[in-house]
Image (cartoon, rainbow, N blue to C red):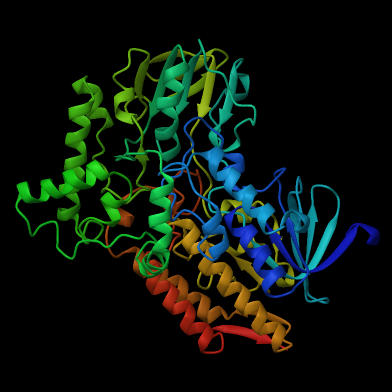
Amino acid sequence: MTKSQDLQTHDVIVVGAGFSGLYMVSRARDTLGLDVIGLEAGSGPGGTWYWNRYPGARCDSESFYYCYAFSDQLLAEWDWTARYPGQPEILRYLEYVADRLDLRRSFCFDTAVVAATWDQGGNRWVVETSGGTTYAARYLVTAVGCLSAANVPDIPGRDDFLGEWYHTGRWPTEGVDFTGKRVAQIGTGSTGIQAAPVIAKDAEHLFVFQRTPNYTVPARDRPMSREEWVGIKSNYDEVRRLTRESFAGFPYTPSPRSALELSADERNQIYEGLWAEGGFKFLWGGFYDLLLNEEANDTAAEFIREKIRAVVKDPEVAERLCPTDHPYGSKRPPIDTDYYTTFNRDNVTLVDIREAPITKITPTGIETEDGHYEVDVIVFATGFDAMTGPLLRMNITGRDGLALKDKWADGPRSYLGLQVAGFPNMFTITGPGSPSVLTNMPTSIEQHVEWIGDCIDHLEQGHQTTIEPSVEAEEAWVAHVAEMSSVGLFNRANSWYLGANIPGKKRIFMPYVGGLSNYRARCGEIAANGYEGFLISA
């Protein structure tokens, strides 16, 4: 413990200043009237959009629903410039929200959490920070995001590289100039798919190192006019209803027909229309059974593969870009701008590291089993230690000295993805066991923040001291999450949803696949039944 003069006491500590943290601080402070402090490692608000400044960084949900829906004021005042906002504009939006709601005064920036410990005698959380100040509060809310713990692969020789290397999730604020440089990009997930076309325009040569090819649908990004926004906002109650009542938080209504009910020509005509429209609607506004029936999924997967073959001029490169080892949508389904056409450029080379894996990084480049690639810059588009990583890196210790890393040694365990048995008064926004990354994130975030706020208010009004799940409720929910993950096709991919991108991480499907609308209803029922499954102490 630090000296007493370095201890600050509050009602609520919120960790993070992205979409989750900003709304949670606003809800706790302005709606519930509590003394709340927000802690953020970055120098300002933004969360994932503060750190992810890589070339081409852009939202893959459409702007009209990738925003806060809780405030009519914010909706009325802000117009996005494009169908899919880029990182700079999303960061400006979150800075606008922080200023409009006067939230900066409730945050300490440049302040990383290094440890959080439950003080059983004081019924409070004690949080130590990188700046030396220690904070204490009755409630701890983690708003650290699901994709914030960067995964930099430990490739032999990495530290011997004489050039520059960067991870897309920790991009320099001043940017990187690739002009005239030979660049290696490792990774072809959603981030790599966004970055490659932009890097290729400036680099002397871009080598894209691909282990697993990905299905991606064109974004069809375009500017948005003021007239469009007037029309959207005049009907925003319907947008709210559709996102909150949908399976994945998107305002799309899937077709009630199976992809198998139609002839190949009829089905492809529908796919062509969805392809022309672009974005997530191809998956969430298409046939209802694409993630339930493998034969139905095959029709969409082959349609996308045929598009790749039609775009990429070199047939051998086209086939290497065609995914065949997992169903479409069972991994995060990227959307793109000019990804496949990038491989028609003379200065772009696709390197298949499934056929010839990387053996080491040398002082001058990357060596695979079949050759050496001389490069000046390495870009790790290798994703994150998803969902659990950001929480485990905070060194959280619950009751009786139980460390969260030990509790989760065999995979994350929670009740509703909101609380963990043995960790009283700690709430996790979009934690493992909730729909989170399978949904439009702002929609899930708002549901969690509002549920947590109502729960804390329930405790405050009833003069209760602590809340946590019973072990039995937690075990039942973990079993339910596992059971639901076996329904459909999600478990057919070796994805970061299971932690498959992190060596040694336990393979457990972490998000809840039962659907946001069903999950939302269950959370509401549990609260209405006196927080069924939770242990509340006076």
